[in-house]
Length: 270
Image 1 (cartoon, one colour):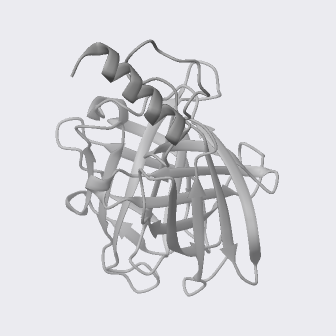
Image 2 (image 1 turned 180 degrees about the vertical axis):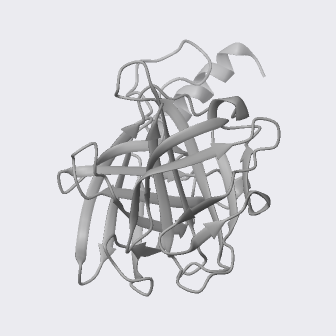
C-alpha cells in the first residue's frame, strides 16, 4: 500500500467516523477526556458540615470502605459514627457498597444498614451518596486526599511504633486518655483495659504494615469479660499516620469493626 493510498484511506475513515488524525498529518479534533476512577486512598471531607474521613483499602485487602463521621468540630471531643462495607467496583468509574452504620452514644445492638455510591468527579477527588433510611435519606459528601499524607508508598512500622495517648470511642463509651502502644519490632499492641472490663492483650492485637500502600492493617480479638459487649469479638481494621494539623505533631487514626458492624476508633497526636 503506497503513502497516497494510505492518506486517502485515513481521510475516508476520519469522515465516516467523525474522527481526525490517522497517524498521518496529525489533526486538531476535540481532546479526548480520560475517565477517572474511584481509587484506594485516604480522603477527608465534610458531611453535613462535620468532618468525614473515608478510607478505601486496596483490592488486596478486600476493597473495604471505612467512614468516620465526627460528631463535633471540637478537637478535644471527636467521637465518630462508624461506617464499614465491602466495595464493588473499586478502580472503576463507580463503586458501591452495602454498609453497616454504628453511631456514637449507642448500644452495642444499634447497627443500621445502608448503601453508599462513590464516584470520582476529578483526578484524586471523591464524592459519595449515603442512603441510610430513615436516619440519613441520601446524604452527599465530597472529599480530597488527606493533606500531608502520602498513600502510594509502603507503610513503615516505625511511623506507628511507640506510645500514643488519645481518645478511644466504642459506641456507648469513650476513653479520653487511652494509651495505645505498638512494639517496634513485632507490631503487637500492648494490653489495654477500658470501660468496666473491656480488654485486649498483646498477643491478640496485631498491627501489620502494608508493603504497597501507606496503611496498617489491624487484627484484634478482645479478651473474655463479663460486662463488655465486645467480649471475645474478632475485629479487623485500618490505621494511618500523617502530619497533624497541630504544628510539629503526627496524628494517628485507626478504626476496627466486627463482621456485624460494631466498631472502635482511636485518634491521637504526639
